[in-house]
Amino acid sequence: METNASAGRSGPLAGIKVVEFAGIGPGPFCGMLLADMGAEVTLLERAGGTFASQLFGGGRKAVANRGKKSLCIDLKNPAAGPLVMQLIAESDVLIEGFRPGVMERLGFGPDACLAANPRLIYGRMTGWGQDGPLAPRAGHDANYAALAGVLNAGRRHGGAPWAPPTLLGDMGGGGLLLAWGIACALFEAQRSGRGQVIDAAMCEGAALLGHGLFNLQALGEWEGRCAIDSSAPFYDVYQCADGLWLSVCPLEPQFYASFLERLGLAADPDFSGAQYDSRRWPAMKQRLTTLFHGQPRIYWENLFADSDDCVWPVLGLGEAPAHPHNVARQAFVEVAGVRQPAPAPRLSRTPATIGSAPPLLGEHSRERLAALGLSDQEIDRLAGLGAVTLAAG
Image (cartoon, rainbow, N blue to C red):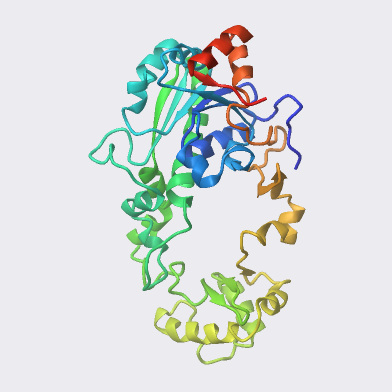
């Protein structure tokens, strides 16, 4: 997949203008999703960067900033306020991820911004929401997933709870659902001509992603007797002789029967009984653990390569882009020397593209200010006041 740095932006959100206040995690991810779909995203960054740039790297390595334009501006500088408000007045969407009250103290709260731009979609990303007893408290992805009840569901049966970092709270429950809310609000604004405020809380989003788990809980099928909580021998990961891992998931009876046949276990007394008899599961799992540990991963990959038995290798981050399926689908791209996931999902008529590499800090400060009608002399004066920072060179 090529980047679309020189051509005009395309995609379903082409023409939508977004102003994003730099932050960490879900806010930048939301902005990236909108930029991938064609929106023009102006990223308001501060000199020296943010904790996110320290944690994930800044400049060209900041994958979440791909397709955006960087305006480096001091939000606390009195000369910067009118510029930011002018930018907001000309935008369709605002994204911010500060704790409740911060934007209001900066002078860019919803009331002020919607007064300047009644059609504005004002997206607020927090861990706990804009109100409630935990609203002012700090937290991180695993905290939100924990209080939502879904982190506990990530435990291996009988083991410590954990889940892949940032996926449940930050990215899925946070940035992705904020982007969904923005898309819905943009659609509604076409009819009403009015904007609105989106209160996206990562804790609530994590709970929503876990709706199926609450379904299983209501049915009395969670923990110990559940096919997908790592209790069942036919839905788990197994280590191979070379230390690598397989994911084994033949849930359906026809896949399970084929799985046993391929392993030579169809007539084995440990496996010949009812698949969902949970009393038999511990012995079955021990047998499979020993069996899979007897050969390297490539042996099992080859054995199941032409089957629907739902046995696949657990790939590392470095392996996944090279897998033949991902190569054929162009599921990963390289931008500015960084291998990263391609935009998703795929639209047939207005596909997503990566508009440009992640910007350097302040790379587009002059361009974005000029677009607001400022002359070079005015921009240089603001830089002299410390209100904005221009990219070197």
